[in-house]
Amino acid sequence: MLQSAEVVAVHLLDRHEIEVVDQALRVVAARAPADAQILRDLIDQLRQTNALLDGARPLRAPTAMGGEARDEATLIDHLIQLDGLSGELMLPLKATLSRTALLTKINFLRGFIKATSAVALGQSTDGAGDVARLIHDLNEELAQSIYTLLCEDLFMALLRKPDVSAVSKRRIADLLISIWDDSTLEIDDFAPILESAWHARNRITSDFGCLVGATELFRLVCEDCSSEVLEFFARDGMTDAETQAFEEFLFNMTWEELNTLRARMRAEGKSAVSPKWAAGVLGRPIDELEHSREIDPVALYRSYNRRQLAADFRLMSGAPGPRRTAEGYLMVHLLEST
Image (cartoon, rainbow, N blue to C red; front, side, top):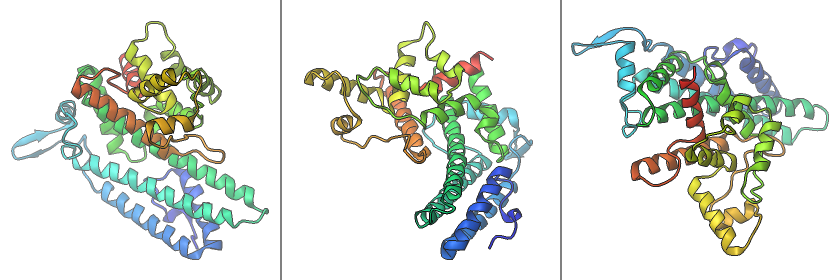
């Protein structure tokens, strides 16, 4: 049995995360001791990852190798020249360790959700509400960690975009260095507007309907999506690319897929369609980002990656359509307006 929350890796978990994890371990240990031992092993893995990360040199600390001086300025110069084709091979070691630590934390939280959910299935009516709230809190912590990883991925994508200004890229590189140097930073510390957008999007379904997006936009409003997000994508003078990227965000699919659906609607004389119909036309499952019980932040991560890959392909091939995700257009606007 966990005796104290202090055994949890405090540098990768904030106070609320420690409290939730402690409660979850106590619940699982009381009903599934074997699962509880697996969770304790996950805690040890997280602590080991934390120790490895803590032992790495701070990225802003000056150093030298092979007669070449390295400091914060040279690292920023390096980052803004990345083309994305080398993946993480050209990133500093601490950046890779930081991302590994974040992925370890994400899988750690997923393990706690799975074990606690299994306990909930066998739970009697008494106490079921407390366990359900605990699972909800774990899901919320998982979502915030995934949003943090998403934001890192977005920043890396913007660094390789030729249409993003050098000034914006330098600010993005500086933010990435801060994130990699401090494992306690989460998305609400450096990009709360993006967190608001993903938080709201992860809580709405797409009915598809006539593929206009009015219903989905209204639902974003109801989920308290940041007014800055909504105003940016509703302003006068929006470019076609921004409009197309926002439609991708609303419907959780690429611009090409939306074009395919609209063409099939016209061919079949349909005025409204369903997610099931769309899945049949596209030949792939349609992720529902909102569920009756809990959100699925992993599905949101898949949605972003699908849209980002499509944007990168258009840029490299010269194909029509948005060259950034909706989040990318929004982030560059925020950087350039502050």
